[in-house]
Length: 277
Image (cartoon, rainbow, N blue to C red; front, side, top):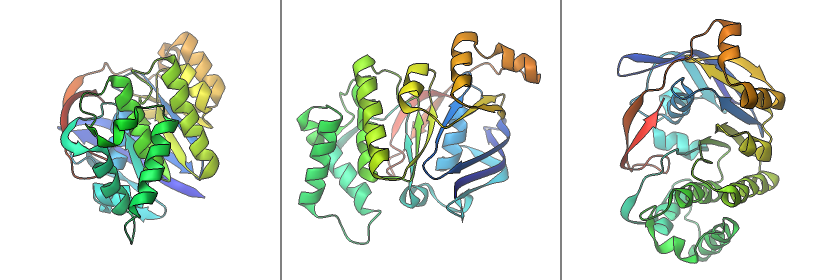
């Protein structure tokens, strides 16, 4: 069954067209890898799905569980079961992890989750990610290392239990041990509940741990090639120039722009960060 369907999606940022006609279908419990050089539209695609208002959809459709996603606000998309693990998790002073997560969880429920149930689940999840036991009482990502911020995104994902999780370079900043911990947590979660994944990464090692079912290469705002795990190995060894030459598509040079995330949903938080398209 199709979980997410994207047809002829065109997206612009500040009058600059980034996505130029993306078609993509994700079914239940699939893992899709989005590959391509920085600046060619991977993060833009995830932001458009999540509903970041700075990304203007000029053409095309996105449906999620047969709902028109483009008519839904960011918080509605999150409550519908979409999660975005951010490339640059924000620091939010004054808001503890436990308060943030309990509010996000209860926003998805008809009745609030019992406090002791929440505490047990959060303590177990923190232990699974091998993070410090005081995580629940620390302000959201404040004073965290880069690797701690990324693992905290997975803590959020495991507690929110989305049906579609989008992970934007969640592996960057992780050392070898932390990379294994994160991958193990994701794989164990998928063993106990259906969850589809869209993953952006530049590292074959992370893909090897998660074993994507489908690979998509994005160049100049279009998906120009699909494949299986063998495509990851070839790109890891040969890069993207051969794909650019084969399909006659120019590789767009990355541009770094300043992005501001606002605390308003469990998907977005307030912080200025640098982020490529």
